[in-house]
Amino acid sequence: APGLYIVATPIGNLNDITLRAVDVLSRCDGVACEDTRVTGKLMKHLGLSKPLWRYNDHAEERDRARLVDSMATRAVALVSDAGTPLISDPGYRLVNAARDAGVEVQTIPGPCAAIAAITLAGLPSDRFLFAGFLPVKEKARADMLAEFAMVDATLVFYESGPRLTKTLGAIEDRLPGRRVAVAREITKLHEECRLGSAVELIAHYEAKPPKGEIVLLVEPPQETDASAEDVDALLRDALKTEKPSQAAAK
Ligand code: SAM
Image (cartoon, rainbow, N blue to C red):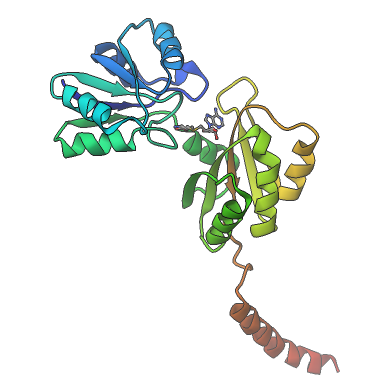
């Protein structure tokens, strides 16, 4: 049926494509993708051949409108280079425009590095905040981490190998003492998930910056990460309970 289909694709292991994704890719009229070479390889692996159209959210309004208009009569699949479209990838503006135009939008869920990392890391998974890529500029990055310091959830970031140790340094500055997980190359040959303090992880990765794609996770604040008022209250309570025992000791 005509419309827009948001299709998740593998984040490494090509066998992670879903049956429904293959079905939609084999039946659509064309595939909007970030990079026709990357998507061309996936299509070839699946034994499929479809028109591939380059799309990203920076496309001219005109081009987006044309693509959306075509969805009245064509089934258009949107994929990104890897994983779930719209998650730190293009698509939001296209879905927004398609909905405005009354186009039918369907999602074909599947692999997503952030979700895969949450299941690997061993950090609390009941509540998490996905923040995509941190700003590259030092001050903006530090400010954002400071903003997250009070958030009672596991923090999830996307990162690249060369920037890893710098980002770990910023985490140690702004969120000191928290455990951090580095989930790397998930579903690929050199998959690795390492949990430790930012200091330990810096020591491990400093000598040889890791290659490949990384999800960084930071544990939520501990209940003992109390604010100044809480600390006063805790001290008062502690003194109250200590006095009788001290008296007893004397
Ligand atoms: N839309 C994708 C998704 O659903 O995960 C994410 C796209 S974003 C441009 C690329 C980032 O995702 C990488 O820099 C890395 O942080 C993360 N990533 C993608 N594949 C990964 C993998 N196999 N292992 C670890 N991280 C991965």
